[in-house]
Image (cartoon, rainbow, N blue to C red; front, side, top):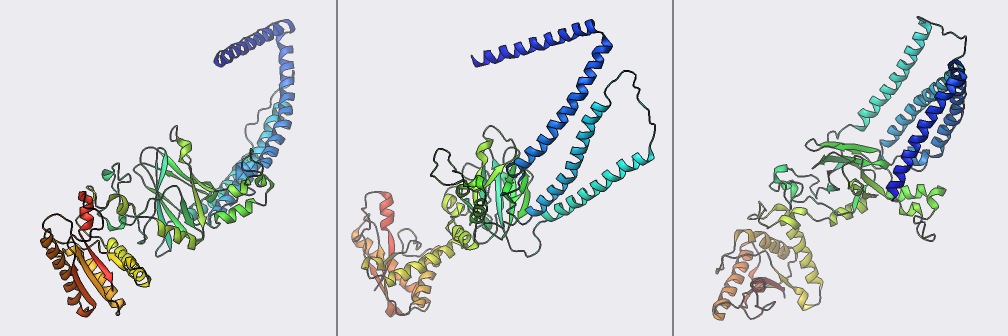
Length: 497
């Protein structure tokens, strides 16, 4: 029904316009062509002058009224180190183009009035005017030189890449319909290599997991943090169509092009909290963030920096928006420490893991730190249960007491713990599941416990501090009712005596 009404209105407007044209033709025939021309010229001249007197002030006034919201003045000053330079370049450009805008519009409408058609008036022909030629050549050339020099200076400053041994953080932003995938480096501070041929449902970025730099890289969820005062280099790319990496408050804007990596370097200079406090000074931001809840948080309290896509990348373009926070370095470091490696948590040990037969350096370090912390807690605890630690990374040949090579990392952690706590006396207990003969199981568990003790004594740990016990299948940790539970019961344990 609405569409029909709109169509009827359009048809009606067309009919009215056609009738106006016919009335104009009849008027011209009645009054005469010259008189109609005289009247039209007079009205066009006066109306042009009136339009200028209304339009030009309205343009200037509206620009002034909405300069904060539309042009980045007022509360939304740049929050990055280079942003002030871009804002200054914008102001210079606006100054010169504003002068041209005002003068050309005054001339346009004034000339439309002054030189309207009048009977008996003739146009003058001026073939050449050297002085005029010089003015309209020199003035634009000087203005363009000023704008170009300032522009080149801003470009060279803003687009400068990281140099030498600068202290910086590099992250990666990959645009796809309709989301940004942000990748952070791990403790090594480096992002790993990628290959689009490796892209799968479980490896959406095509990370090459044979590259050790990929092993600790993290893909955070919706929460993104950046440290204040630290130079940030963003690798920018896209998986499908053209996107645009846009941080409006940081004055950062760069296309994300499939197959052509780009970058942007910037330094945040205001934390989210500091920016909110600046907004707090403005009346507009002391209104409720939710108009339906007058007692709720104010607009300044709900402010967040945002990452957006500045390209129309499809119907879901609006959902590209991501919120991020700028925080002090200490808070950022604590947040980064909580981020889990994508490889170690999502890929490690699975069929598509190219390193599944290896123990990785990063795992060795993590295991050592975890083991050291567990030993300290066990020593400090008064609970007997807390003094029993399961040694999950000691492995044996099937049906044998021969220790596998990869077990050395766990055993070396145990050697380090015994050296760090010279008064500690321990028991190494071997355990099996209930499959097979109980006597055989007990003998095998004792042999395995003795193999661990031998490894320790061979590396200088006194035998008097060690005791090996084979428990066989007499102390299952869980019922032996499933293959998974039976695997849990085949274990080596450390008990602090």
